[in-house]
Length: 185
Image (cartoon, rainbow, N blue to C red; front, side):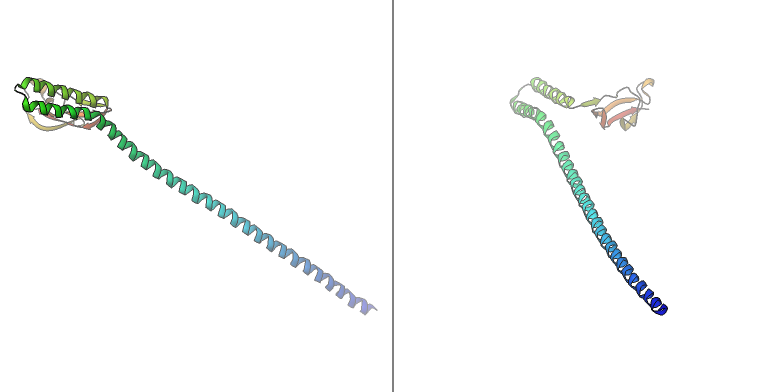
């Protein structure tokens, strides 16, 4: 009997081991399924973030294109505004040329040209243009371009601007063209 009991115990232990193995296998299968579901969950999250990234990148690209297009339109509109202000001056020049063809006296033509010049200068000043008048000022390479040097007429004019060959201009307090000057030495 003892032998039978001893033989039965291992059978019982084997049956318990089989149950334990089945539970372990079931647990491993559940863990594998959880990993698979977590993996697919992670993949779904990756796909969602990737989609957001692609959309954000496309939105930013569209924004850059829109800003570039608006900048070009702004430049075109700015040019249009300046041209519209200069058209009356052009009309005045055409009338002056027509009048100059039949004019017998120079004084009225000269007066008309002076009026047109003043009108043009006024239009440009309204847009922020200011002429540079450096006569008598010390020569400064930041604002002047020396085209020649001449002996100074007086001792005071040595190293200073004696004459202006071509005016310089500021546009909205920014130098856009250097004045071409004659410097006394």
